[in-house]
Amino acid sequence: MERLFIYNTLTRNKEEFKAINAPHVGMYVCGPTVYSDVHLGNCRTFMSFDVIYRYLTHIGYKVRYVRNITDAGHLEGDADVGEDKISKKAKLSQLEPMEIVQKYTVGFRDVMNLFNLLPPSIEPTATGHIIEQQQIAKKIIENGLAYDVNGTVYFDVEKFAKSHNYTALTGRKLDELLENTRDLDGQEDKRGRLDFALWIKAKPEHLMQWPSQWGQGFPGWHIECSAMSTKYLGEQFDIHGGGMDLAPTHHTNEIAQNIAYCGKSPANYWMHTNMLTVKGQKMSKSLGNSFLPMELFSGDHELLSKGYSPMAVRFFMMQTHYRSTLDFSDEALQAAEKAFNRLMEGYKTLQHLQSSASSSEDIKALERKCYDAMNDDFNTPVLIAHLFEALRIINSANDKKTTLTQVDIELLKTIYKHFVFDVMGLKTEEEGNNKAGTALEKVMNLVLDMRTKAKANKDFATSDQIRDKLSEAGIQVKDGKEGATWTIN
RNA sequence: GGUCCUGUGGCCGAGUGGCUAGGCUCAGCUCUGCAAAAGCUGCUACAGCGGUUCGAAUCCGCUCGGGACCUCCA
Image (cartoon, rainbow, N blue to C red; front, side, top):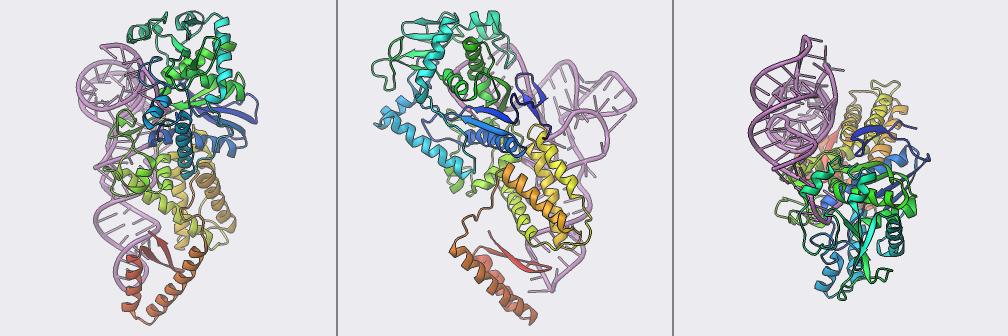
């Protein structure tokens, strides 16, 4: 198996990946809160973990990938006192909370599908695990690290910090956190300013609430992940992931909960993806600078000159390492779209490449470089650089400027299959070639054949007319050594 | 204000001590009836100042700029 190195937020270092129970790997990623459409920033995180999931699988691991759906408990506004985000939206829309959940869950899955993300092994919901969350809260109280005040259960951070490193994930100093935490209204019940809720008492008008030993209420945000990761992956598993913005609060609290619950820190490797930015600023709903996937596909956005296909966008994201910020712009998207199309054209060219007795290129070494790139903390930009080297070789061979044996041609096909399609999850756009596609293929062969004859007769007026009219129709003719080919622009 | 990250050529974006990333754009050449496509070549950068070193984009310090988190957030 490949030697894989992963950057671990816990140690701030790249470490060799060792699975607890190889070849099995448990991976938990914090999923979306389904109270509105997912924006592109969210998509980037899930896409990054999709590649991680795909690569782990590709090199032979059996991965159980759990990504939750947060459909309750997530608060609007200030910590622990606001309304449930989903309830709030439901009231505005005159809908049942679960209608909101259903609508945006379906929408989320549709978008993930368009971006060609593999579905996780398990996609559990917070509302489906109320009992488990209550049990964890109860156990933490028994262990003396949480307390119940008027129907709300708080985690005692300062008490926990006496015996454990509360800030292990971020390396911050507890004193500084205590100093810098603001006073918030409605939290008089808390003993410490860093304490957070495991279970929250519901007001009568609160739409989503469940009975508990502390009265009617709903779960705090962080506890759902503790409950679901423990249930499906065990008290300790391999990888826990999420966006970088979750590390200081959500993940820090999650680790504290797990330790308080069972004495064990849940994951060995914590992975965090960086933010998608617009003009240097984090894309987020609250800043109002977010893009919806559909706006991107249609081009219906003031910052876009045109629409972009899901695969062009996916390629765009792959060009940047997951731990770097990625700035989103029309210009960068156009460049990515072009590069992506060229890469995909290369695959077509590869299908009818003629072999030679010997190769002038070392394809095996190229394949090795691709693995090395991915083994180095999933470095897709470097992988892409190598794939463009492969593309150059393919095009050169097509121009008869380099030679390839049949074995090397097959190896190039394997590289494409493994890295472009399986690992990066890209696919050709015109999938689903139906009857119309086949018919077009035949028509184009006929038209290009006629043009070739016209050229042979030096009837350039006719051949140019065919080329120009096709161009107007969005079909580009490319003359090559072996005759003409075409693509739809 | 505190903590942390970051500043690469026209644009996007890898790279952490010596050996040209890559993509897009632009210019030239080859091929071509012409064009496109493709290939080749060129534009060879590392915010500024100082230091460490035989040698720094890469390490250290300072200055300036950008960002994240500290409050819901992928």
